[in-house]
Length: 180
Image 1: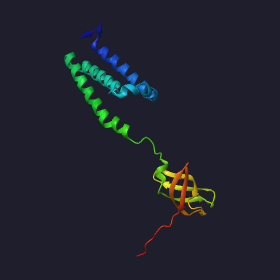
Image 2 (image 1 turned 60 degrees about the vertical axis):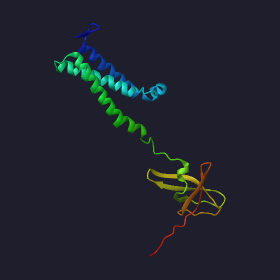
Image 3 (image 1 turned 90 degrees about the horizontal axis):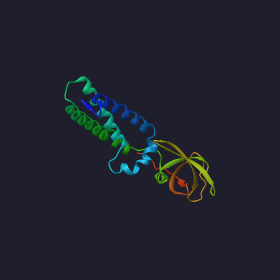
Image 4 (image 1 turned 135 degrees about the vertical axis):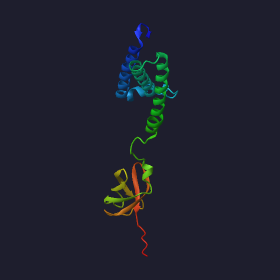
């Protein structure tokens, strides 16, 4: 079968090559292109899905044309259905979970409130010291000041009460231990 003076196999092959190249370019420049397509992505236009559909559709069509003797219209329908199925699975099982995944292990200053840390640089009664807060994502060292203007020695445990202007306001932490 011919279309526009080209055999249908060549059209599928050109679609595969162009779709693959555009997908590679989109992967390399995705941050820039997402800014351009931001307006369109809100209206179900996702370049990743469209380029994936073109590539899978063209690959299936080309392979079926070469390997089977099925009529070209039937191959067109089967390729379209397979591409739609694979792109839907790609979207549901890969793209949606990736978009909702946490992007980094950063923290908000408000998250530090109520946590317990250790003084690494003594906190004088009217000055600044440094505390270390340990967590699952690593250790955080922050400037600290005593909440009630009492000096706090190094290696003491502290409780973070509040955060003002990026400085932790802390008080000594007395852990209650119950001996049975």
